[in-house]
Length: 343
Image (cartoon, rainbow, N blue to C red; front, side, top):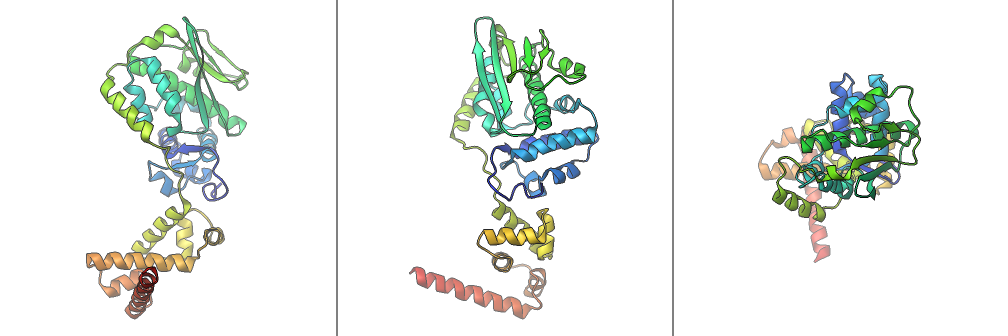
C-alpha cells in the first residue's frame, strides 16, 4: 500500500482532513497513528497538509487498521464520539451556519465532495411526515465500507442533535451490511426511534419532516450565505501531486544536509528502486532533479546572503566549494543560453 499515491489513476478521492481526524481519534483511543498511516499508505507529507486529497482506498484501509488496532467491533462509534463540529473544516462550517436542520443536511448533500468523492449522500424521498436520505460508498472492501458507513451515519446523527440543541433522533436507520452479532452500542449512538435494519439495498437515515424545520442554534445566516457562495467557486481539493511532494522532500533533505537517494526514498516511504522508476516515468532522473534542487537552494542562498559558500557546498553534497562554483557557472550559462534561444 505504500505506493498508493504514486501509481495508476487515483479513482475516488478523500480529503486528507478525514484521515487526519481518524488517526487523531484512533490515537486518543490507544492506537498508534503513525503505524496505521504507514501501513495504509498515507505518507507524512500528506498528513502535514490540509488542502490535498488522497486515494479513497487509503482512507478505507485506515478504517480496517483502526479496527484491528482497537480490537473492538464498535470502533466507528468510538471514533464518532471524538467528533466535534469544525473537525471537517469548511464542510462543517457550512452545516453549522445553515438556517435550519433541513438546510444543513442539504449542504451536506451539496458539498460532500469537499470531504470525499467516494461517498454519495442524497435526498431519497420526502413527504409531509418523513424525509429519507440515502448514503453509500463507491469504493472499498466489504468490511471497510461497513466501518466507514457506521461512522458516517453516527456522525450525521450527532451533528443533527448538536446544531439544533434538541434531542432530534432519526425515525429509522438502515444499513446495507448484514447484522453483526452485537450492535447495541451502534443502536444507542444512532438512537433511531424505530430501530435499525440491516441487509438493506442502501444505507438510509429517516427523519421527521417537521424536525428539519428546527433552527440551527448560533447559525449566522449571512456568514452561511457568504460561505456558500465561496464554496460554489471552489474546486475539490487537488489530488496530491507526487512530483511536487518528491521535490519538497528533496529540498528538505538538502536543507538538512542529507541529499541522498535512499534518504529521500525513506521520506516518501518507498524503495530506492521504486523512486527511480517513478522518476523515469515522469521523464526525469535522480541526477537531474538533484541538480535542479541544488540550483534552487543556491539561488535562495544568493538572495538571502547565507550561508557562506563552504557551508552551502557541504550542505548541498558537493566535495568542496570549487565544485559548487563550477555548478553555479554551468547554471548561469544554461540560463543565458535559454534566454538567448527564447529571444
